[in-house]
Image (cartoon, rainbow, N blue to C red; front, side, top):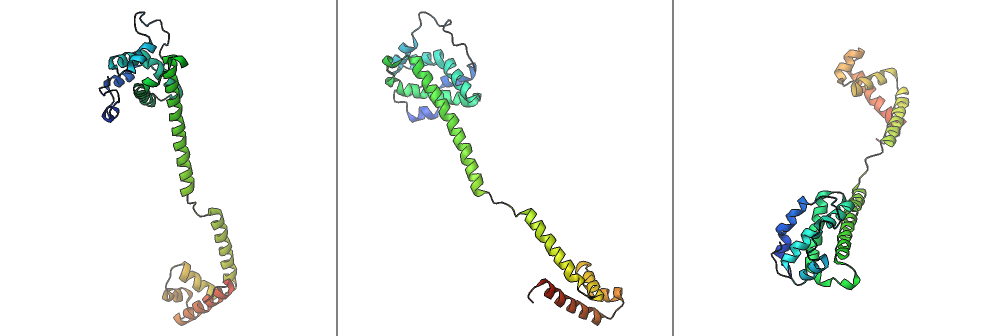
Length: 221
């Protein structure tokens, strides 16, 4: 039962009353027929009127009488049981706080409470959707696309073709020296031994070959 005064102190809101713990015992889709209601029990309208005066005992009875119906309606909207119980608790807190606003001339107390429960459930759905939409917008805004792999592949292939054409313009010794040095990983001394030519010849051919490649590829020196 709520332990706050009629104004419902902030601490009471932060510390849900024990009666709300009974929500876990309420069936998801209860029988809403009124056959089980005792004939001598106060009507829901009467209980709500007493709640409006700050009658906590009446509020407890009102809760027991209407919780299955309100929770059933909320669960039909939200599906998720935990969220439904949370929204139902908010609805009953709102009922406690706003019972004085109920006007019998505009409908029954149960209709007033069910309308409140439905509105709260719809608000929760909209809030969840809004959060998802916001996450998507942020994701799109912060998305940093990686480089265009297709474009990169095409450029690499084109560059490779240009190198092949440029290499074809070199002399056999220049081409062999460059391949062994830059692609084979051999030192100039090792290249001289492999090609059976003086080291000075290898250096000259490498220098001349690089100059020729720069010219063919249009690379500034």
